[in-house]
Length: 284
Image (cartoon, rainbow, N blue to C red; front, side):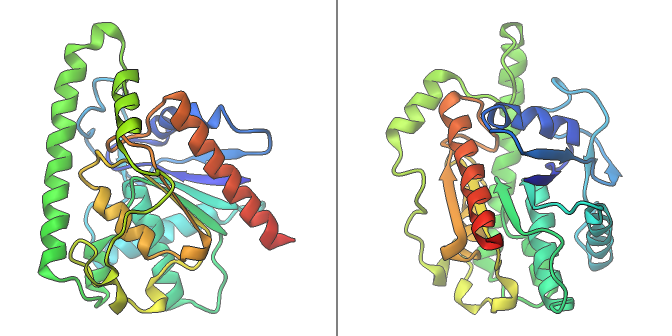
């Protein structure tokens, strides 16, 4: 499988490569990952500069219509390769870029095939400002959840940066979980491969039953998230907008990150294998 990899805001392709190294090492042969830098240089996000050197990038500087369209055009150009990509591998902001591109494509050029066949979303969520600009119903309650969780994520990341800097002498990575924390999370949670019971009429403020089919994801998707992530409700919303017959979910138990524990790495590698098999069945 060939993956085009879209990093999170205020990071880079090189950082995303480091974040995903543990689970990629668990994969068998035949997987190619192309890590690209987003088009706009920007300052580092919290917890980044202390551990990863410049430069840092974001996919858009705002979510106004012109900027979003420009980002979509940039991504479509990157996807035009002699050998096509099978899937996108996305983290955080990269997920919003991928999801918005799919919805835009389905509404603007539905007669054309997407230039990829599947997506792996890690710590993702639906791009609410973009969906609102497209006329979709985003109630005030959904905006409140969106704004509150974004603020909590920033606070969590800033606090984690301070903690990690204090422990830097121990060479602890900003993208790993300690063995004790990972074990506690995995013993306390429910089946990590099952979405929690969420009312689609009130999915953290969103009435997903009012979203038309053209604004849902009709391709194989994997949704990886952590219940300690303040933005986890957004990941659940995005999963609920995906085809439940062509969807795999996994709760890694951590925060807004990709834990490097053996158990999580093997689980994510298993999710990649599931997607590989899904696409092979479709091709066959």
